[in-house]
Image (cartoon, rainbow, N blue to C red; front, side, top):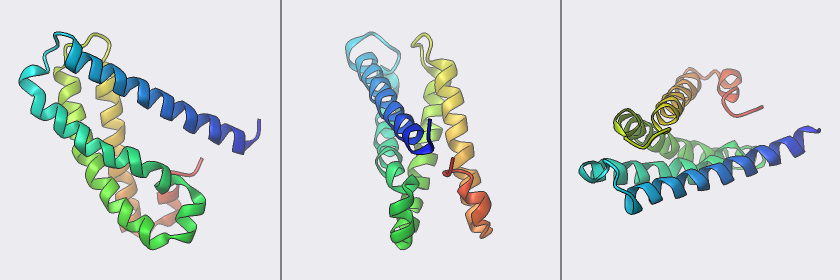
Length: 139
């Protein structure tokens, strides 16, 4: 299978899985008796801060956009970093304290990976190491 088809399949899978996970989170939060009632602020803060990386991610990782609009890539990257760190920290807290069976490990692992990848990409670009920075978005 060629690289272009794999890339499309990958992004479609990411979008579908993200939509499903969002559906599960909303269903759990609003339609079941979960322990998020006393953590509603954390949940909504996570939701609001995670929207930016989810919306900006495709543009940040799209080679055509990145090459033609480097200044916009940098600006959106800063917004992406703030959203990722705040969203990742709240996801880590929620993951460690949630009572939705089967979500503790995935939330904790995903948030830890999200935080690590974001911080590592930021550190590499601040050191002007573009080759290492690109490892975080080029397959």
